Image 1: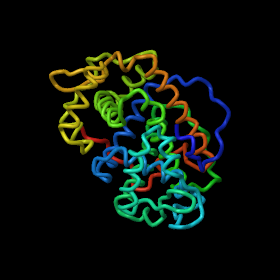
Image 2: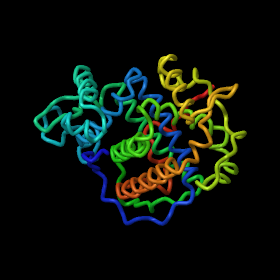
Image 3: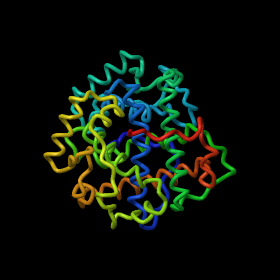
Length: 323
């Protein structure tokens, strides 16, 4: 998946030692994804597939690279991607991708060039997209700041390299897209993945930022008991994600029937069986390992792992509210 999406960050370093705080990292990644998807679903008016397709085209077109400064112009020579390649890289039906691409073009968010589909540089200045990209970047900084606060090993800072936030923006796209890459094959649709990730984030919120509890359940070998997790009503998830209540309830009911979600009096929980399933844990390990590789490349771009707060553009973003 995403075979054509090329990174503008430096090459990956050699493999790292086994990571022992994977479940803690998954919880914090879920917070990043929840914040970004909360904004995505408003900018793209509830069209999650369209948001992902736009993300891939933006990443592929090179407009996020520090080398372009985010200023690739319409018609300028550069990388692009065809609808066929986009559909293949996302493992989505051609007609589905074509429909969303046509909508993005009609909205002026993408253009067809001789190199393929691209996001023109002027799109970055649109208030909705500019705000979305800053959320992507700053939630990545928040993720790293939180991991550092939990003493998760991070790459060595290279303070002699000036940091440009577009490097972090490209890395944020890579982190967000890795969630689709490693988990989506387990779900009937991207909406199901979106829903279950948001429910998982809400369930873990009571202890995600509780240092003692979060560290006690930091590894994949230990799962917090169900009694510690907070059920969340489907209506709250629908509000957070700007989804119709009918769509949310229909997909929730299907995932309850599949055993992925369970319904409690106070709301929904991701089932213990789903969280502990070997394939789920394997996907989570792959995702966290890939994210750590992205961090290593980000260090080569001058990110301040010694003091992540120095890299914020607008400051630490608030967490998504589930009340």
